[in-house]
Image (cartoon, rainbow, N blue to C red; front, side, top):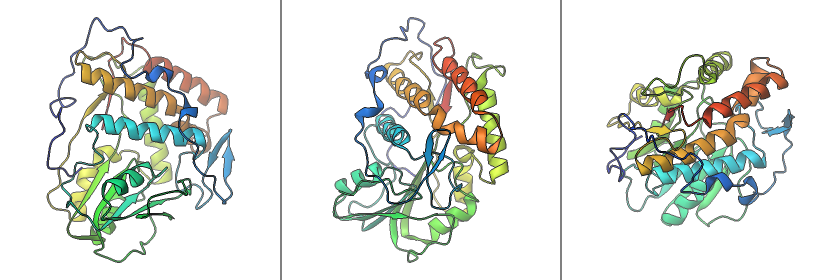
Amino acid sequence: MAHQDPIEHDHLGTGHIAVDDATNDNDSALGVDSWDEDDTKSLSSSVLKYTWENGRRYHAYRDGSYWGPNDERQLDTEDFMHSMFLTILDGRLYLAPIPKNPQKVLDVGCGTGIWTIEFAQQHESAEVIGVDLSPVQPSMVPMNVKFEVDDVNLEWTYPRDSFDFIHIRMLTGSINSWPDFHRKVLDHLTLGGWVEQVELSVKTKSDDGTVTPDMPFSKWEHVFTVAGEQMGKTFMACEIAADSMRQAGFQNVNELRLKLPIGRWPRHETLKIWGTWCRAFLADGLEGFGLRMMTSVLGWTYEETQAFLADMKRHLMDPKIHGYVEM
């Protein structure tokens, strides 16, 4: 992640997280526990046909290129994730020191298009292109927004040296070769342009030993390690992003690595809020993240998968486990 100005709480999430022994894990500063997936507005349906597996809908274009579903439930989860990232980044859409009036911006793997639209609203000078495998974005958008369906692993058809800013978020498990991908990104940036990538790790850790190898978190990490190897697309983007950029030839590569607690166990109030968001996001997204990996790729039965996901959720909700994931 390239950045110039630190976030307001730049000391948070980078060191040991103190535990609040008095936490009542049922309270919520955000009211996230009452959040309902129907609260997010439904996005426009696509004219393309879709693939259905185990009751979840997946994109049709280059089926199998991306592991996650694209149904309304997953779109709501992605919009919730966007709100979580905004909270953690003090309301900012990005940290890169881009020009005040960018002219052309690319949002790679734009998902629901929420970041694309909000960036365009904040930067009326820019033509903002959002690209994704699924055409699930809304049809009513600002005049300076355009959405395209494409696979970014293929050759890019955009003119070289054309984008002031390229934004990448949560493409883990989607890219054939991260260094090769970032070489394409570099080729399509203007001189002095910026790229920013935001990823979440699939590894759950703790600083006090409350996350142990016998917990389902270890199997969760193993699932994505093995599935990534079989698919040829690593799920360790969070761990290798900065080095991949350097391998591609980028200069001035800055990495900000934050610990996102799972739950309200931290002593610091801001970290409690982060943890509330993170736990709700992970618990809601577990099936969408893991279902296809476990069934279609690794050969688990649907029943085995659901039993494991239920065990994962129980551990995510346990306030005695002081786990976190890195962003």
